[in-house]
Every structure is written in structure tokens, then in C-alpha cells.
Image (cartoon, rainbow over all chains, first blue to last red):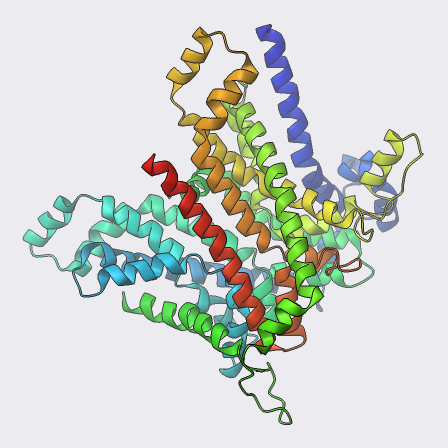
Length: 280
Length: 282
């Protein structure tokens, strides 16, 4: 085949996929920037749904969703940020400590404990939701931050990723530290944890996306606005008829923007963590 | 390691054991004083397996999986091969193509709800293609198109994840295999058929299993866009667990559903282990 023709064909195909990927996202941004709801509805049936002419840009929808007292968007964003950050940060320490003990310390039942953690990976959250809801209801944790944080800190898959990394770290490093009189805690804190930055990144990205995007669990455990995360708030905003599309899309943009910005900054890390999660 | 073990025991092991225990009771979310909670043996399981709505949900979920796995897998492999070829600005393309996967399913559902509107993009497109002969179709409330619509938006959101895994798999293929194929004068199709596709065997197994398990968890899109309708054609197992356990408070029955759901996922994972070990022992 003619090489020039082939590369033009490939580029054309790539641009086509680019359009398919970006069009829905363009629709979200464009709609959020149109002040006239009537015009939005007319535009939905045409290619103008995906575009807004610079002259028509209005921030009215953003002003509206940010000043809505019934649905305090900033509060929801803050809730999601607090919940996600807590799970991820505490989770990194807790899960890496378990993995470090499993890979480095000699104690009875170590092999069994490792096998238990590995088999727990397979249990889907969806299968635990109902009994967990019953437990949380009994201890009066509904409508709180902790009900969305504490159950998700221990994460067998993260433990497994840390464990794999720690077993590959050369023992000579710890031995040298122990000779100098370090305690296991010092080896973990001063040596193993700082070296495991790539795993920390993978675990942090995977868990942040999981928690930021979670829907089923907050749907069951939050009722009021105090602890409601932004994903659920958007779902309820969207589900209250009739939807005001300009506002719904402004809400969607504000929910997506933090993730998109972090993604743009750490693109390689995101893609690498997807690969790391698969090739275990 | 203490805190990690305690948290795991409290929030993973306990609810897991509890779900098995509760599945043999008539436990309710809000205790009803007139109906004391008691053991009812296998009655929940009899009801799960004996009721058409479970088999309907199970069948729908199976259909979703059976369709999305090959569709999404083929798209992901195709796009990965495109990026892996001599494409200018491939890092830019890869970076943009990955975006849908970092978008929240709630946002994706909201956007696609607009595209599926009766006066929306897909209907205008259909109208244009058929010169006004077909449509408009109410995609999400039509029994024929509701599941297909969910598959389409799910594939759009999910394919980039498989794409980057295929890309890693493609880059791990020994280049000498391609050299050999070139020397033998293979066509592009023959090279794909005899070198690329078989070399990705373990990647295929991972992709199929991971997509299957993700597919079985189908919930958010359904809950937001169709609530299991129309006529139950998009009802799924997790949606059923949610409706029974949370909305109707039938914890015992929902626990039995959860156990059956878990066993299904377990079987799929065992199949994965089996296929992967088979490969290693060869």
C-alpha cells in the first residue's frame, strides 16, 4: 500500500475518533455557557448543540447553580473533596503498612493473612452494600462523612499493589538499615514508603476516581445536603423535572473540571495506573 | 498493620459474613414489630431463583455483558493499534482518547440523555440518513433501543481503559515476530490474524474478564436513565439489589440476591485464573 495514503487514512481515522470522543464533552461545555434556555432546546437538534459562538457566551448558568441555596454546589464539591482526600490519604498509610508487614515481618499466619487479603479483592462493593447499610444504620452513621470514608479506607487491591512492590525491593536495603539499628517502623517510614511513590500514585489515582465517582453508596446513606457528595447531588438535580439544561450542564462542568484539570496535569500517571492495575 | 486488619474485618469481612447470615432470615432495614426477624431457611433463595424478575435482570445483565465485551474490546483494540502505528501526535491522541474514562458516569449519563432526546442529535442524524423515512425514536423508553443506548454510552465511557491496556500489550509484542511476517510477505490482515491477535492472548483474557465483571455491576446508568424500564428490559441485578434492599427495605431478600451476585462474579474470576494458569503451564 502507498505509504503516504496509509498515513493520511490513519490520521483521518484518528481525527474522526477524536470528534466522537470530544463531541459529548463539547456539548456539556457549550450548553453550560448558553444563557437562553429556549435557544438550548432548539440547538439540541442541530450541530449547534456542540458549539457556542463566542459572542453568545454567558456565565448566567454558573451564577445560578453557584447561588442555589436548595442545592449548595460548593458544599457538595467540598463534601466530595473531603471524603475523597480522607479515603486516599489515610488509605495510603493504612494499606501500605499492612503490605509492608506482610512482605517484611515474620509472624505466625502471615501466609494465611496474605491469602485472605488477595481473595477479598474479588468481593464487589455492590455485594456488600445492603448488609453494610444495615450496620451503618444501627450505629447511626447515616448522613455523615465517616460513613463514606471509614468503610473504604482498607482496600485489599491497594494492599496487593503495595505488597507486590515491597517484595521486589531488595532486602539488602532493609538489612543495611537494620544493621545501623533502625526499627521496622523506621524502615517502613524512612525507606519503603518514600521509595514506593509510583505505587502511591497508582493507588491514589484509582481510589480517588472510585470515591469521587461513587454513586450507589451515597445514594443509600445520605439524605440531607450536609454530607451529600457532588455525584449524587448532580443526579438528583438532573432527576428533578423539568431539567433546566443550562444549569444541569454548568453543574456537570463544575463536577468534572477538578478531575479533568488533575488529569491534564498528571496524564501519564493516570494512564500508567490503569495499566498497572491490569498487569498485576 | 493493626488498623488495616481491623478495618478490613469490620467493613469487608463482617458485611460479607453478615450477607450470608441475613440471606437466611427475613431481616428488614427498619424493624417491623409485628413481623419478628427469624430464620426462614432457603426461602429467600427459592424466591430469588423462582421469580421471573431475577431471571429477567440476570438475563438483561448477561445480554449487556455479551454485547459490550466484544464491542468495547474491538473498539479498544482497533484504536490501540491505530495509536501504536506511525501516527503523528500519537501522545496527544492517546491523551484525549482517555478522557471519557476519567469522567463520572453520572455526568456521562446526563450528557447522553441529551443526545438521546426525541429532538436530539441521534434522531436528527437518523432523520438525515434515512431522508426523513425513519424516526424519531425515543431511544431510552423504547423496548427495542433502550439497552442498545445504554451499551453505546457505556462503551464510549469505558473503551479508553481497555485501549491503554491493549496498547501496553501491543508494545510488549516481540518486534522480531513482525520482521518474520514481513519476510514471509504477509498481508496486513495475515499479520494481524497470525501475529498481533494471538500474541495478545493474556491481554484478551484480562480484558474480557474485567469488562465482564464491570458489566455485571451495571447500575448508575440504569438508575439515572431508565430505572430498569421500559417493561423491565434494562433491569439489572444491582438495580434489583438496590430496589429490594434499600427502597423496599427487604434486607434478607436483598442479601440472598447479593450472595448470588457475588457467586457469579466469583465464577468469572475462577475462569480467569483457569485460563491464565493454563497459558503459563503450556
